[in-house]
Image (tube, rainbow, N blue to C red):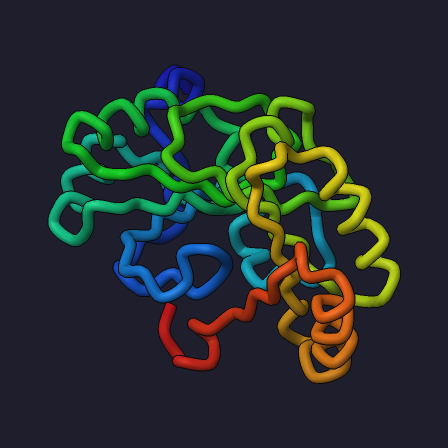
Length: 204
């Protein structure tokens, strides 16, 4: 479908107004747009329904943007993996309305769109491209076990010097891995701990 190819249509899974629950902008109100489609397949993913883009209707970006305008001056584009799609038209339309654009991505696909905040969350199954490391404002590493801390350090070596570094426990393992993460952050203060506070607050 032409609209999906050029970015005027996007497979919208859901959209909602809430507080950013994670990372650098935690606690900030924002309008979230979840784009379907992902081929990375993290076993701990909490939105597996987003993987198959064919299950979610192609939605005109004009509809997405007009709804976002009603709620917030900041939009967070997440997935799925949003960079599987052309983000240029969506970002252009949002910026015309002076809406800030944030993205949460694995960085495994070429960057499209213009981003006011670029949150990179690398996955072992499909590593980020060099351009993603270069553009990252925030590196968010999901920690499932001790080996993930080694992976986190490897990824931190690739980002720019201004990038904010976060370790975040995988939700289902948080009670087991949190003591390990806390100790690691105390020993390596370049890292901060991120929590999925929206789950504690019982909000989207």
